[in-house]
Amino acid sequence: MPSLFRRKSADVVEADLPEDDVPPSQDEAGSARARSHTPSKKELGVVTPKRPGAGRRPAGSTKPLTKQEAREQRRARRAAISEEFRREGGPRDRAPERGLARDVVDSRRTVGTWFFGGALLVLIGSGPTMPPAVQLASNLLWVTLAVLVVVDSVLISRRIRKLVRERFPKSDQRMGGLYFYAIMRAMTFRRMRTPIPRVELGDRI
Image 1 (cartoon, rainbow, N blue to C red):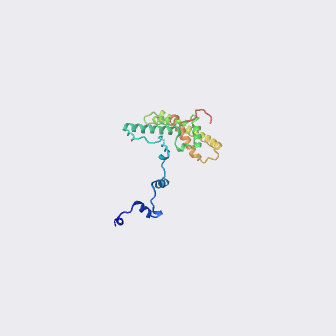
Image 2 (cartoon, rainbow, N blue to C red):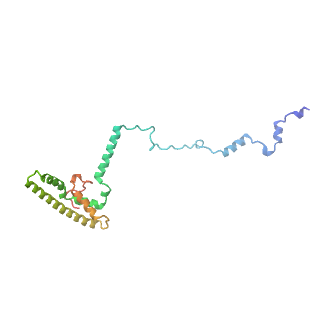
Image 3 (tube, rainbow, N blue to C red):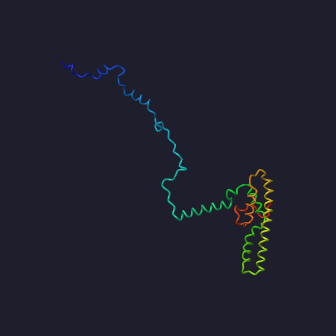
């Protein structure tokens, strides 16, 4: 009986399968896959904007500086720092009370600017090889300079105290330190003062 050993046809196999076991058709599988698939931006036609090129590091490594170029950069940096310090001073110079003390000193001629020059003359004139008259004149010059510097320092200190009390009544600056700061500036040549003077001689403070 040959029919017993014949393989069942595909129709018979599909008919014997239960409804739940019937494999989905190609269209149904495609639609199911489409529902579970998330489309990409490219498929949706959305173009991702490129990041701006500004601020990016240029491609490739920068050329290393030569010794001469590095030396020039260091020299220029030191010159810029020195110029800033010459113009604005350091942290101790930035208090408004100290700015006022500088203006008081810079607006007048001070005896202190002649002190070191006079001290040099006294040192030379009081040498043992000098005549007694020259030594006596040198000693008198030294005493005169010392007295004038003391008087000028007292006048500067009184002026600073008056202006600070008027303009900064709640100041926490030590007046003794402020006086010393002004006196040392008064004994420095005007062109060598740091910060540079911001007022002219004779200006009213």
